[in-house]
Image 1 (cartoon, rainbow, N blue to C red):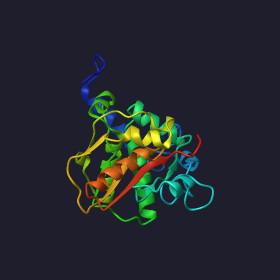
Image 2 (cartoon, protein in one colour):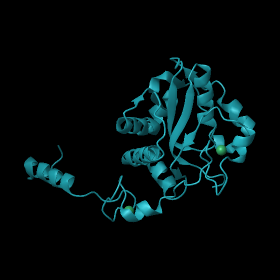
Image 3 (cartoon, protein in one colour):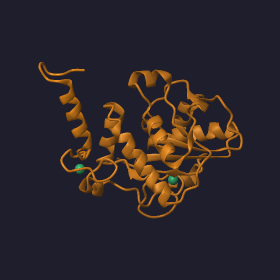
Image 4 (cartoon, rainbow, N blue to C red):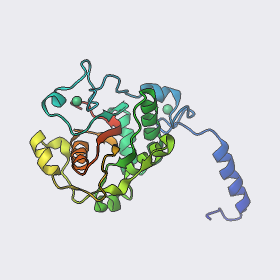
Length: 242
Ligand SMILES: [Zn+2]
Ligand SMILES: [Zn+2]
C-alpha cells in the first residue's frame, strides 16, 4: 500500500471508505452529482437519443420506417436496437471507453441498452454474443469493450453471454471507408463459428454499429451455422453522415 511517510494505514482505509460513501460526480462533466447511470441530470438531458430509427438497422431517420439501404440490401440481421445516435457526447463516451480504458462507461452503455430493451419489451434471446475482436487486437487494447457491455447487460436481463462460440481470425479494414461491395469482401472469412448454435436466438452486443456490415456478416455466418434468429443491441448507431 502506498501511504505518505508517517501516515497510518488505518487513516487511508478510512478515507477510502468515506470516498466510497460520498455521492459520485457525473462521469461526463465531473461537476454535478451523478443522477442516473453515471451521469448528472443535465448531461442526461443532452444525450442524443435515437428516437425514430429504421426498424431493421436502427439508422437514425427523420421519418419513415425502413431506410433506403435496408430496402435495397436485405440484412441477415433480424433487427438492430441502438438507444443513442453516435454524436456528441456519445462519441466521447465511446472513445474514452475504448481508448482510455474508462470502463465505467461500459456500465452507462449497458444500462441504456437495458432501458430501451425493457421499454420496448423486446424478446429475450437464448444468449448474448459480444462482437468479437481478434486475439491480437484484444492483447493490444487489453480488453474487448463489447464483452464488458455484454456481461453487464446479461447480468441485468438474466441472459447468458457466450463469447466463445464465434471468433475473429483476421483484422478487417475500417468499414466506413469502403463501398458496400468492398465491405462484404473485406469481411468474408474473418469469422469462424466454433460451436453451432442450432435453432437458437442470438443477440450480438456492440458499442457502436457504424455501417452494420460487421454485425450483418456475423449474423450471416451464425445463421449459416444454424442460428434461428440474430439481432444486435448496441449502445449507439452512427447517422448516415457524421
Ligand atoms: Zn454531468
Ligand atoms: Zn435500415
